Length: 122
Image (cartoon, rainbow, N blue to C red; front, top):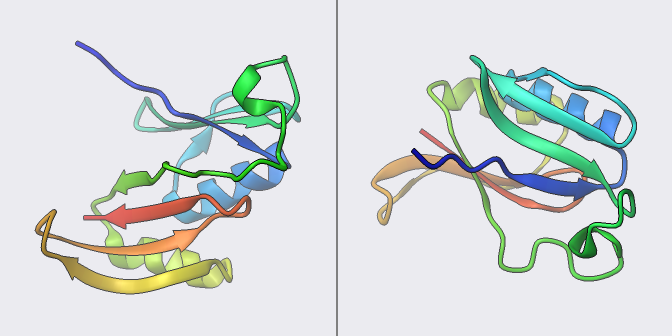
């Protein structure tokens, strides 16, 4: 089995953690100012890493274009609730729920606090 655990660099780990917890209903497993592990049902959903910490070469400079070539895709079983959560957070919703003919799923798109592009899909 191969399992990926995505780590993204963020400006403020606690604020981003709170955003994702409120958006997706996941929970903190680590907490802290520089690193966070977010889980749902004992599965890692996303890890958050503070820009410039621990000398990782791709996480040193937040002035470079963030997220070029990256889409964070989250599959959820409560699409309407997650959209409601995004609206309560005043998230930057790029496109409301719509049917994607490529994935054959309903989805919506938004930007997170660090401008990463997210697809939330059923």
